[in-house]
Length: 287
Image (tube, rainbow, N blue to C red; front, top):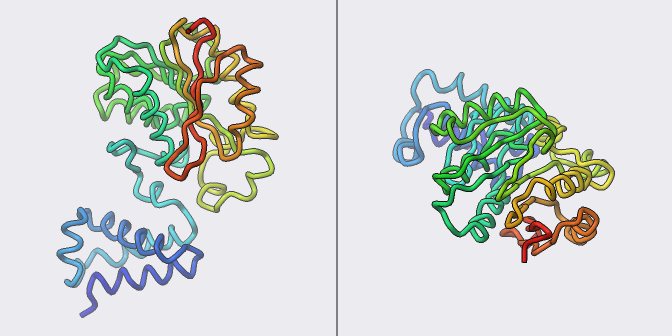
């Protein structure tokens, strides 16, 4: 009898040969097995010494084959956890990253009143993971989520509906802040920030499977940041904040971008790896 644990070990070897690091291969092999079985981790750990159900082998083999082709696990399973929430993802949206949770954490530092009727714009919403997290943290907030991709907005709208937020999170097809007047108490964004020269160096999971429009930020990666900072000034409430994710090595340029846009740079907060990641700016009239 071949056990479930043995089948997962074979899959791990296949994934390692496909180019994944051993630790990643072990995790992905287990996640895909649990997805194929519809089990949580506790059930999987308890039953892995057993022989798997008859339907498992064919289903699991297909999932592992997709991962060997470097398709991201989140796209294979159709979901990724963000801020403790299960968020639907597809090839039409950027897969939520742990570092993007810093946008939510940082917002909580500056919008201290959780019950305030805040007006928030989530620019380049993608899956709407940030918009949904903020809507749940601020139960009276009204959030406008924008994206340039209609297919991304379809995913966003499904996620918003899943969490019962359709009356408080509205999705709009537009480029960044175009067509929005505000004033907003907060503008938050995880814009494209990969430079042209770095696009080709991205991992296959990113370069081949995630939308280029959500990644490419122009020659230096900061084109979208400049556009958002410049357009935020006229759309922020005088006491409003702009919180924006940036890439590794881009922190020194943010000061010049803020100065050129006429907005005040307050701080740049690091992520868990110590990389400056969340740039916080405020309306120029705020003291």
